[in-house]
Length: 262
Image (cartoon, rainbow, N blue to C red; front, top):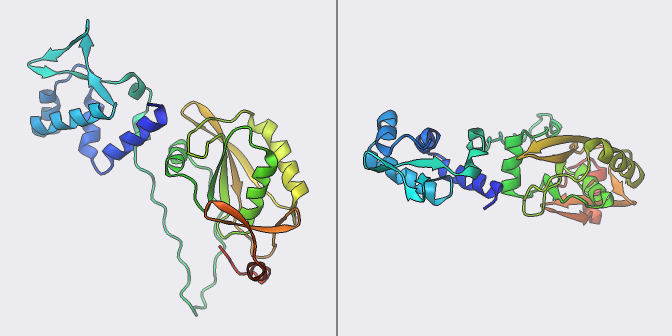
């Protein structure tokens, strides 16, 4: 089991169970289930059940000495597994729920506000995103991906309501591999590719985020400005879901009118 899998399991088992997370924090190889029950004001049987669940998913394990399980006052002692000890407790917090955008009702005279650009994710947020997978605004690119492929994704996102983010150094399945090049070295070829392949001129932001000891490069693509229709090698592209498509004639017409397609 790798680190990402352990974090995913932890988030699942702690979701909506703050008392279980408290028990996990108290596990240190010295406290018995009885003592933990006393500290948390819970029944020993319930605490023991939670300890077994935590052991089953690989967060804790029975403490051993010379190959024998260590007990105290008749209770088995538990300690965090070596892998779990490397994970800060904050990693097991659930993802932050983002407020849903409010759109004016049909026929309303309320002015439509341009969506705000996506912000650089924190380490925890990046882990959540990788765990959930790609979507309309999020694309993963493995280290070594040709910069032209990334530019194509950028062009398609430029024509969408929210814009998007591209994580360079993350596999298609969300595994954090890490970048193979420093941000400063990657920035120039990326910006050159954007300048030479996308028209009219487009601007993207490149930042780096550290996650589990690996550096991931994050490309922020701004929301569509409802004025320019961006082309990649003279083709109008749109991102739909997790794929890039050439705009249909009716879609291209809507974009030129300043109307959102996606």
